[in-house]
Image (cartoon, rainbow, N blue to C red):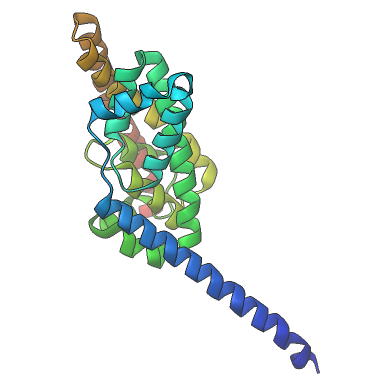
Length: 229
């Protein structure tokens, strides 16, 4: 009798599971399609498009940046465009807001997709990301965010899939993306106004990234040592 009463519940759970897997499959296909078929326009064209919307340019820029940061499209062009469109301070603030929204969304997408799906989606980045992020926290995320050459999206999805807790992930992403975004926005500002001042800002930004990368890596190694002994 108990078994008969339980059968409709099992059927309902089964359908929920099927629908969820279908939805997640569509997300994966969408991300793969974006990765291979969508390219951002050149920086100058992106600048013209955002300027064309007038006062809503701030909102458009943040929204587009958040969307880009959720996908495998490199975020570099958006940060550089921020330096071309706005001053260094405003461009950095808007870039940080946009990239953080995208990183946060990607984290929860990865949590829903699960480890096995993410291992396939990460492709060539899988080994590096999984090795560094499995059961890790603040300093691991910060290090990968700061190291040049590692895109944002594998860190976003890897953190969600491989056990990084939400609060350390958000805090590490925020702390590390500020200098990273600042340095890229400064490059855009230098392109728009190649002066000694903007050149100095670029140098300061990249020096900060280098120093913070070393500090984050050392702290990450130190926090890992007790668990590896």
